[in-house]
Image 1 (cartoon, one colour):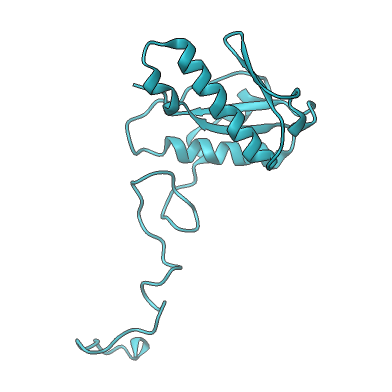
Image 2 (cartoon, rainbow, N blue to C red; image 1 turned 90 degrees about the horizontal axis):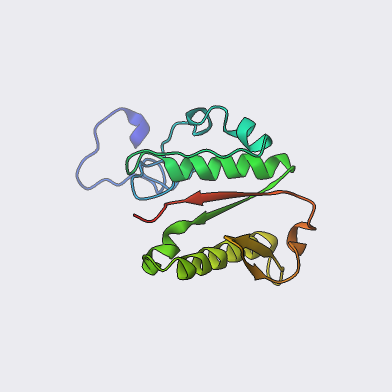
Amino acid sequence: MADSGEPMTENQQLPEGELYGEEVPTFNTAGPCIPQRHYMLPPEPRVPGALYLVDFDEYFVIHAPRQTGKTTVLEALARDINAAGQRVALVFSCEQAAPAGDNYDAAIDALLATITDEARARAGTGADATFSLAGRTTGGSPAAWADGVVPVVPVADRAPH
Protein backbone atom coordinates (compact mmCIF):
# COMPACT_ATOMS: atom_id res chain seq x y z
CA MET A 1 0.00 0.00 0.00
CA ALA A 2 2.58 2.58 1.06
CA ASP A 3 5.23 1.18 -1.30
CA SER A 4 3.05 1.49 -4.41
CA GLY A 5 3.95 5.15 -4.86
CA GLU A 6 0.27 6.06 -5.16
CA PRO A 7 -1.28 8.50 -2.71
CA MET A 8 -3.38 6.99 0.03
CA THR A 9 -7.09 7.58 0.08
CA GLU A 10 -9.00 8.74 3.12
CA ASN A 11 -10.24 5.25 4.04
CA GLN A 12 -6.88 3.46 3.76
CA GLN A 13 -4.74 2.80 6.80
CA LEU A 14 -1.05 2.06 7.09
CA PRO A 15 0.02 -1.24 8.63
CA GLU A 16 0.80 -0.77 12.32
CA GLY A 17 4.25 0.68 12.93
CA GLU A 18 4.97 1.41 9.28
CA LEU A 19 5.13 5.20 9.48
CA TYR A 20 4.31 6.44 12.96
CA GLY A 21 5.26 3.41 15.02
CA GLU A 22 7.24 3.18 18.21
CA GLU A 23 10.57 3.12 16.37
CA VAL A 24 10.13 6.61 14.93
CA PRO A 25 12.01 9.19 17.04
CA THR A 26 10.28 12.37 18.13
CA PHE A 27 11.44 15.83 19.14
CA ASN A 28 11.51 16.39 22.89
CA THR A 29 11.42 19.58 24.94
CA ALA A 30 9.81 18.16 28.06
CA GLY A 31 12.83 16.77 29.90
CA PRO A 32 15.93 14.65 29.39
CA CYS A 33 16.30 13.13 25.93
CA ILE A 34 16.51 9.38 25.47
CA PRO A 35 18.58 8.51 22.37
CA GLN A 36 16.32 5.58 21.41
CA ARG A 37 13.18 7.76 21.56
CA HIS A 38 14.21 11.30 20.66
CA TYR A 39 16.03 13.17 17.94
CA MET A 40 19.15 14.63 19.51
CA LEU A 41 22.73 15.66 18.91
CA PRO A 42 25.41 13.67 20.74
CA PRO A 43 25.73 15.33 24.17
CA GLU A 44 29.40 14.51 24.84
CA PRO A 45 30.91 17.15 22.50
CA ARG A 46 28.94 19.82 24.35
CA VAL A 47 31.19 19.48 27.42
CA PRO A 48 34.71 18.95 26.06
CA GLY A 49 37.17 18.34 28.85
CA ALA A 50 34.54 17.33 31.42
CA LEU A 51 35.93 13.82 31.88
CA TYR A 52 39.42 15.31 32.18
CA LEU A 53 38.20 17.52 35.04
CA VAL A 54 36.51 14.56 36.72
CA ASP A 55 39.72 12.52 36.43
CA PHE A 56 41.55 15.25 38.35
CA ASP A 57 38.80 15.61 40.98
CA GLU A 58 37.89 19.07 39.72
CA TYR A 59 34.41 20.47 39.33
CA PHE A 60 32.61 22.44 36.66
CA VAL A 61 29.28 24.14 36.14
CA ILE A 62 26.98 23.90 33.15
CA HIS A 63 24.94 27.06 32.89
CA ALA A 64 22.50 27.50 30.02
CA PRO A 65 18.91 28.54 29.32
CA ARG A 66 15.94 26.25 29.84
CA GLN A 67 15.44 23.26 27.54
CA THR A 68 18.94 23.36 26.03
CA GLY A 69 20.03 19.88 27.10
CA LYS A 70 21.79 20.40 30.44
CA THR A 71 20.19 17.36 32.11
CA THR A 72 20.71 15.21 29.02
CA VAL A 73 24.41 16.16 28.98
CA LEU A 74 24.82 15.44 32.70
CA GLU A 75 23.12 12.05 32.38
CA ALA A 76 25.34 11.13 29.39
CA LEU A 77 28.41 12.21 31.35
CA ALA A 78 27.32 10.05 34.30
CA ARG A 79 26.80 7.06 31.98
CA ASP A 80 30.33 7.53 30.59
CA ILE A 81 31.81 7.81 34.09
CA ASN A 82 29.97 4.69 35.26
CA ALA A 83 30.87 2.73 32.11
CA ALA A 84 34.58 3.41 32.69
CA GLY A 85 34.32 1.63 36.05
CA GLN A 86 36.82 3.89 37.84
CA ARG A 87 34.16 5.93 39.67
CA VAL A 88 30.47 5.87 40.45
CA ALA A 89 28.47 8.88 39.25
CA LEU A 90 25.31 9.71 41.15
CA VAL A 91 22.90 12.01 39.33
CA PHE A 92 20.53 13.85 41.63
CA SER A 93 18.41 16.97 41.55
CA CYS A 94 18.83 19.86 43.96
CA GLU A 95 15.18 20.80 43.47
CA GLN A 96 14.22 18.89 46.63
CA ALA A 97 16.04 21.56 48.65
CA ALA A 98 13.98 24.42 47.19
CA PRO A 99 11.06 24.19 49.66
CA ALA A 100 13.53 24.79 52.51
CA GLY A 101 14.08 28.36 51.33
CA ASP A 102 16.62 30.05 53.60
CA ASN A 103 16.51 27.20 56.13
CA TYR A 104 19.94 25.79 55.25
CA ASP A 105 19.71 22.91 57.73
CA ALA A 106 16.51 21.69 56.07
CA ALA A 107 18.06 22.16 52.61
CA ILE A 108 21.12 20.10 53.60
CA ASP A 109 18.87 17.38 55.05
CA ALA A 110 16.87 17.28 51.80
CA LEU A 111 20.02 17.05 49.66
CA LEU A 112 21.55 14.33 51.85
CA ALA A 113 18.33 12.31 51.62
CA THR A 114 18.26 12.74 47.84
CA ILE A 115 21.90 11.70 47.43
CA THR A 116 21.45 8.71 49.75
CA ASP A 117 18.31 7.61 47.89
CA GLU A 118 20.16 7.79 44.57
CA ALA A 119 23.09 5.79 45.97
CA ARG A 120 20.75 3.11 47.28
CA ALA A 121 18.85 2.99 43.98
CA ARG A 122 22.13 2.70 42.07
CA ALA A 123 23.40 -0.09 44.31
CA GLY A 124 20.12 -1.94 44.65
CA THR A 125 17.77 -2.27 47.57
CA GLY A 126 19.16 -2.69 51.05
CA ALA A 127 22.48 -0.99 50.33
CA ASP A 128 23.95 1.31 52.94
CA ALA A 129 25.56 4.62 52.11
CA THR A 130 27.06 7.46 54.11
CA PHE A 131 27.43 10.97 52.76
CA SER A 132 28.60 14.17 54.35
CA LEU A 133 27.56 17.67 53.36
CA ALA A 134 28.45 20.86 55.24
CA GLY A 135 29.63 18.84 58.24
CA ARG A 136 26.42 16.77 58.47
CA THR A 137 26.31 13.06 57.74
CA THR A 138 23.55 10.66 56.83
CA GLY A 139 23.22 7.01 55.99
CA GLY A 140 24.53 3.73 57.42
CA SER A 141 27.91 2.09 56.99
CA PRO A 142 30.64 3.90 55.03
CA ALA A 143 29.62 3.59 51.39
CA ALA A 144 29.28 -0.20 51.60
CA TRP A 145 27.34 -0.16 48.33
CA ALA A 146 30.57 0.79 46.52
CA ASP A 147 32.86 -1.20 48.83
CA GLY A 148 34.29 2.14 49.96
CA VAL A 149 36.90 1.84 47.19
CA VAL A 150 35.32 3.47 44.16
CA PRO A 151 35.29 7.30 44.30
CA VAL A 152 31.85 8.86 44.03
CA VAL A 153 31.23 11.66 41.52
CA PRO A 154 28.19 13.73 42.52
CA VAL A 155 26.37 15.07 39.46
CA ALA A 156 24.01 17.74 40.77
CA ASP A 157 21.25 19.02 38.53
CA ARG A 158 18.80 21.92 38.78
CA ALA A 159 19.88 24.25 41.51
CA PRO A 160 16.90 25.89 43.21
CA HIS A 161 16.11 29.40 41.97
